[in-house]
Image (cartoon, rainbow, N blue to C red; front, side, top):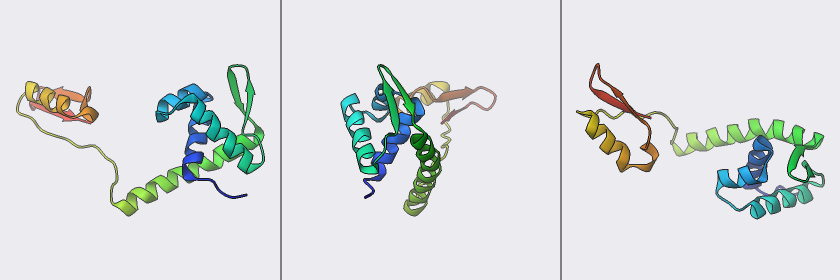
Length: 129
């Protein structure tokens, strides 16, 4: 068996977490058909089924459960190692602003900060996470 790709395991992990092709497609911003195709291709490459499909429900097969258990740990380790190699570890950033209104302006200026403003009146700072 030839390993397809990191992406195929990420897609499998996403579908296994939600047990829904539709929810997985929404999460990774792909079509449901694309997700279904990628899972089917991975199953064909592996030589066994990962999911039991019945009408609108998905269940992991025994092989799927075993692979998902191992892939969760492996994908997490791979993601951490890539972040370390790139020198881009994630974390919180705190930005101080003089007033509540300027903290709102900062939050509106960047899409990742929208809805993340927290005003702390005791020290007149807003923390953005």
